[in-house]
Image 1 (tube, one colour):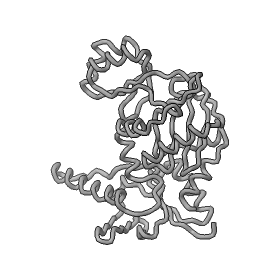
Image 2: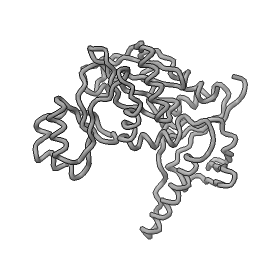
Image 3: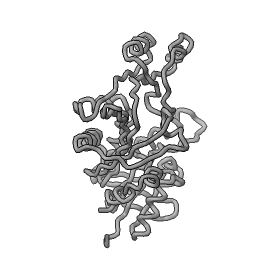
Image 4: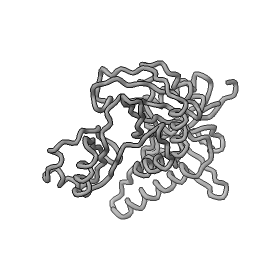
Length: 308
């Protein structure tokens, strides 16, 4: 690649994946800036013109970045905006809300090669809708959705658990690991917690975890061997390349498309019967650990999306 590209990475300044991609692109001669939106409005300035649908970012170290010069944007993390510290609480709320509105307007409206877009990120923030969109594709038998309920009704939860057999539970939006549902969890004392937050309850699927990376029309998968319910809790997890059938690979591409994802990590589980069950599609998957273990060209495909 002879032509220099200007790439913007949305991330915290110490994010390992962001720094890794920044270093590789810089070594190739590209210009890369990391933007931490949590530093707005205190540490950088943003101007947006609705008529021209363009923006300018003034960084604290001097450079002014014109949005029209940006070739691609790697959405690694969206960190929100900084809290406004003002003596008047109402003024602080208005100030922070104004900052959020301007930053999110920029992310939503401005053109560019997004990897991934505001729309894709937004769908990940409402995981029940994400699941519904995947269900609407009618991908069976290539990929199956396990029976799932999201609720804070103790009656609905108990009824689902009785009908679905062995179940797992996890947060609606994430942030905690998956757990097996036990009789103790169905006690009235535990069910009282539903008054604080809903929960995802799902049919337990026995099998092997499969992580599928989709980059445009490229599909790469790896098999995750672990005895843990959640492989992230296993320091001895084994990860190897895994071959998908054309039908399953095509289903993963369709999942990515319906969720507006050009780069994603899709979590499947493979049963002894050869069935693949869908759990989640991540709009900003970690990939360095997978690549180091199974040698899939994940970095190469991501860089191709950003600069080619």
